[in-house]
Image (cartoon, rainbow, N blue to C red):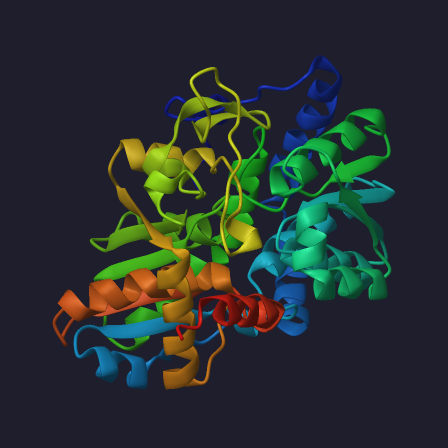
Length: 395
């Protein structure tokens, strides 16, 4: 795995942090470098990924959906089948194991859709550790089932009522907690964002997705023509893309266009943002002319973030990855189409990637293949979809 020089991907990334956090971040990097290639650590993590989380996940040919669209063949990387219902467990097991090796007594995390919070609670329960999770108050309402799951797993959930009451504010509170309790506490960050080494660490733990896609496509004698994943902070996407950037595949990240880019009610950072610093990193952000972070909107709580992982910003500027966006309406249509053709209910986050795959497949040839990372299952979202459909039923 390529390690970024000075924690930078080109001009993006870095460590924009208060002095009080410097020792904690340095301690984290030192331990990560010490353990990431350690045979015992890798063996233990591999064990938990296989027999606890359920790896490897299958690569499923979505025959009905492909035939309905009449173009390229669509394959789904089934991260939704993992324990907990999403890709998040890949990273939480890796980081919780690292925290244990570092002899930290307490783990804190932030969560948007609740999937990272649940995955943190699961990993901590499995490894005999305690977790506390910060979650935007708005998201605790949208995802109350996940709040209950975290509580059941023995984790305390702190609703955050400041700012927009979503993921950005949950991260702010988690960082404040970390500064206060830096000696005893490990901050288990859920996406490929934040100060170095988090973006590279999360990427490395999530790269199991792209590495499996590579070997699974080889087995069916195909290389993907297109690789698609949804992007909020961007952990499932960077885990999918990073092992495949050296191939000829066209790679597309899909952000949340919400009510449309022109409406300003969206979370399409790479499509409509500008460069700035947030949560310890230089990256693309949604901000106003004075550099104040603007409020975001997405039907999916997990994509409702005004920034993006710095490596995605780098891939945008170097043009290795294309970044598109899907509106709430397109997402609901894709959600329903996949559910009805394949019997697979996707998370609303993942439905953004499906929406793009539908467009790409229609234009593609039958000899071409598209791999979509289905990053999570949709149980958590059925109420949100029901509410949307009830409000938008045409008379």
